[in-house]
Image (cartoon, one colour):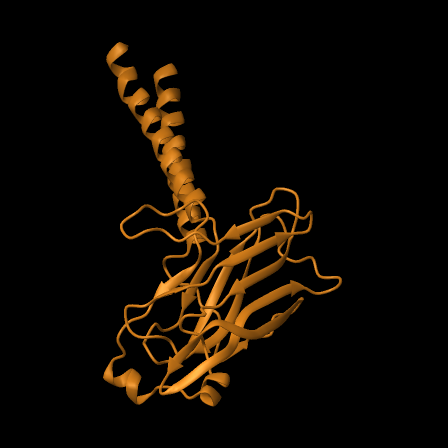
Length: 238
């Protein structure tokens, strides 16, 4: 009897361990992500901001993204989203920036998406995706940081603004962003102008690294292991 219970106990421990790991991974990925459709330097990219609602009681009603000022974008456009209004705020840069022989002193500083009157915003247990077409992107190897402030209907604010030091672990409230890469010959040949970027297809896509999909798959694994433990326990009793 003693030997027959050992595998069952081992499986129970494994289920608990898997659940802890998966819940930890889900918690770590539950923050604002910025996913560009291209990272090629000097090109124009449609960046998708995926914003999950982490409150148990209130909807998200505002999302504010700060844009780079050390390598400002000369072109910024937003994709219309039903139930939301978007405002691109321009202003003076903290310091002049030289770009292609031109001194730039003013640029787009932030994008603010606000839930429209009568709109529920991002409800509890849901997420939303906001898209912006920006460019040109800076030189290859540049880290584009996009600090984001998420505001809830009850006044709570989540500041996704922390940047990890090189080689350090991800901070508790990481700022979304990405790193630019060198453009290929094809990307150079097909580089968009600002006007072409405005007409680019900005349909949202979901890749295989979707945290929600990973969470659902992981949950299925835990349920499967739990079911196996129950079957073994019933066999022992019989």
